[in-house]
Image 1 (cartoon, protein in one colour):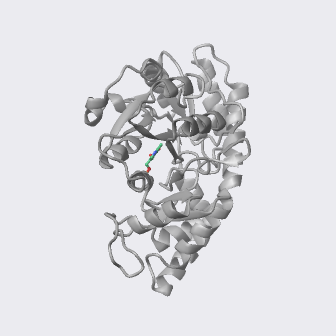
Image 2: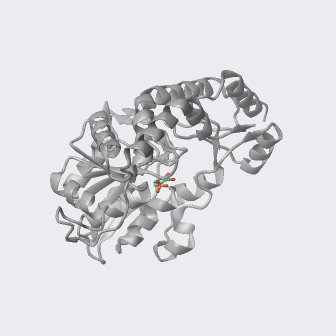
Length: 360
Ligand SMILES: Cc1ncc(COP(=O)(O)O)c(C=O)c1O
């Protein structure tokens, strides 16, 4: 069996070290907000070259806390894209503000920057940019738009840990960067985990406080917070996994390069990279007009594909009020297929994937 993602591989490879670290956590006796979490926050901010990092329970909470920290009003609007995880959108609704979906570019699957600019109104206060599948749009252009219209920029980096634009780490372009360490992600732990990074001290202090009930140092609740902390066991795992992130991303890129070079079938459109973007291939997504048939053919050969995402957010019930006509998103959501990519996918398995796709 070849799956489109295989988190078990990397955990098994590091099992001894992981168990050793977990054992130390048990012996230590502090299970929440201890030294492992502090170490991870420090290493992660150094890795990203930014000033502040705070561990959270997951990226959905990271996005919610980031939005809550911006003091938005219920009439304010946050712009994002619709071909993304439900998490991106529900964080906006849970923050109690309006959502406006804009279309994406059919080359990069990232936001269409021209359409984004056209959709900015007086009500627009923030943009959540999703670095979908592991690559970004032109961040310089996006930053110019944010500056021109005085907008907050939040980066949804759930799929793009370690990714870069023009040599700068994703997550450090906006006011706040939100990460997921869900087991399948490029940087992952053994359960749920997340982080928020920023260069803004006030925002850091606020999201950190809000991730723990809104407490200040005296345990006086000064904000309406939530409980969303990165625990010591997950932090201990992440301290190990962070050391492998660049190597794992290089391996993902190598597999992608092999696919890009050797998949040759006029019925299959391969992904393109944005100039300046260093893609980390959380997913390798191809397009075909005959998706059901392709998935069936792959399955016959014991290759299991994914679809990210079949139902874009603007078509999901909870977002009905914010429905829009997004032609590119609608079209792509009917054609996309995520084919296997993960560190540990052998050359033989890659060749099998390529052969089945070329024969299709
Ligand atoms: C783009 C994107 N944003 C947010 C999330 C939410 O991450 P988490 O599961 O850590 O809440 C995901 C996870 O699937 C994602 O892919």
